[in-house]
Length: 533
Image (cartoon, rainbow, N blue to C red; front, side):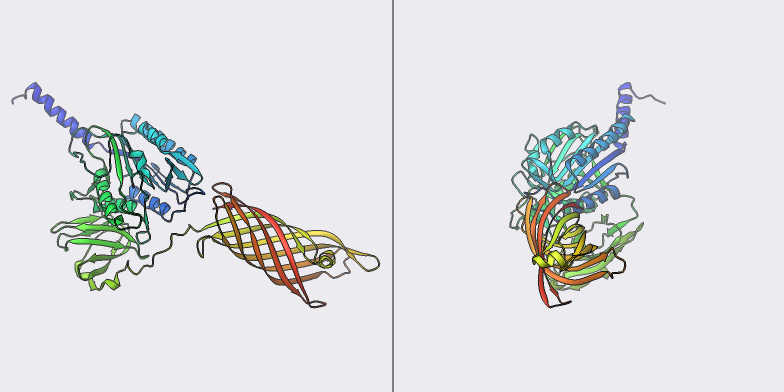
């Protein structure tokens, strides 16, 4: 047997080593954050948290991120964000020490303003975050920012406004470094869509990761396949919007060559397969709630796979003069093959997306729980001195914000008050008794936010129960109960991400008809500290 020359052995060995390195799996760590709130000077977003949930689910289900190597943060602060990042960096450092190749993916959907991410009332400087990721102990770091004017982070050497480059996925030197993808350029707003149930950029990025971006047909979606797809679709979908076209950007600082596979659809016995025999065209997959979950652009004589989560979807293929509509059920652990014969022709009026009424960009509904203190008193002096006494109050209040419409609040309250008193008789002091008061009420108020301060007015209906409990057991206790309508007004101050301080006043009317027909009115002043969930 002939021995290969020394230089030939070295070449074979180098190729084998390169193939081994190329085949080395990547340990993935992912931090996914979504913040609908961006502070008092920003408008609350509708879908940032939903976008984060979708991206987190995709990375775990299709992106090779193992449970425990991920963090999902919803409406958390910058401190929480950095703490979670530290935990993942520690895990990545330990993995590298064991010889594993690592990737750190950071995704954020929410507000950005004045060069900072806005996480509630806290901020995270974009340049500081970039420096932090540049120094992170992972072989490759990927930042995906879906926020207004996030392209300010890519206004550096290597930045591009369009996907005008390619990386050789077959190269023998693996890519190492930092990649930043943003949803918009430095002077553009990132836009949301009611029909998509998310932002344009995150929707198309997620749809691409599920398989629509797999133009090579190899069952893998690489980082730059996903970005190029999201770029083209985002620009196309926003071109006619009132805000104008939105241009995602990227910045890369990579040593070596090669691309990183973000999602892998190969060998999965779950999802949806559009067979080679299916007609070409654009397919849309709509959730039972009427939202477009994913899209797929199929060419002639190609087979396409989409990594849909288990569930039932309406399938829509748009044709020049009509629609083709049907249903597809994706079952857990099984691949569903789309059957063209099960689709039916339908007019455009039957479009399952067209029939969904656009929802207003309302603030997200949330609850508050508050502890209240106040004072209750009747306007009429003889009444408050002998019949219904002035009384301090302590109570609990629950508020449901933005449920009926934006900046409306529905409150439920319970207040208790008590004091010791003496029944005054015409000629002498009477028996002592304990006067008690209970009010249970509900209010509907409208607010007008001005930064952190929001004045409000509204209507209230309360059930008032008063009682006298005499110390002398021979005297019967007395009770009086009545429904009383009234008005409420005050000011709410948003102190921090979770705490609010409210001062308010109430006026009520009641008809007293025990011993005489009298119209009475009372007022309440109070303050409460509330916690926002």
